[in-house]
Image 1 (cartoon, rainbow, N blue to C red):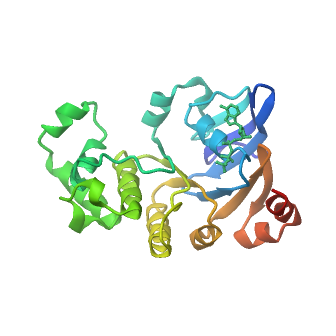
Image 2 (image 1 turned 90 degrees about the vertical axis):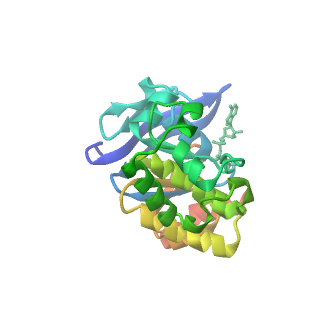
Length: 249
Ligand SMILES: Nc1ncnc2c1ncn2[C@@H]1O[C@H](COP(=O)(O)OP(=O)(O)OP(=O)(O)O)[C@@H](O)[C@H]1O
């Protein structure tokens, strides 16, 4: 196993058991600073459990989980890990439907204020500019005043990615961001992620192989809680072990 130096995320020998069943089985994985990585694997491979371990929702039974090569995430709770700059997006969009697109981004501003105070707070110039900038990045500038509930499924996902960007995270974890999207929305999402990956590290769990291909990132294949294969999409798709686990399910 490589040393953690230079990594944004370092997992070594991570195991998680649920009633004796190993959802993660000595998983080792290193993501470099600034890297985008896609994680694939059949149902039950341990992808969600891996995200849960990184974000502190699940504590591993054994193994090292280091952020920025030195911060031990196994010793921290979920809120503390989020505060470090690790943002997670679940598969389903969870935007505030009754608030406008702009207000959703405003709520995501990294401040100590609660929801109520935030809505009555006057934005500073830099904060308003930051929201404008993010609206441009996620392509929703002309929808800013609309209620988030009126957006399409894809647009809601982009808004939620925008909310993560507002929090200035160094590492974004995205769980199946294009599930349920149209082909056009999927292509737009690939461009969006490639754009935002220039300034942060991103881990994407995804089943959609066309999308994985469009991202062009290194692919890690999980199977039965550990890494089965790693490399370009072409390399892993040609790997007979990978073909076997996908055909065998
Ligand atoms: N809280 C839990 N209690 C018991 N078993 C669990 C728990 N969470 C996950 N598992 C089991 O651990 C294994 C890995 O699950 P996990 O959700 O991490 O897989 P996944 O790769 O995300 O799958 P999918 O692609 O279906 O989302 C599965 O067999 C699952 O049933």
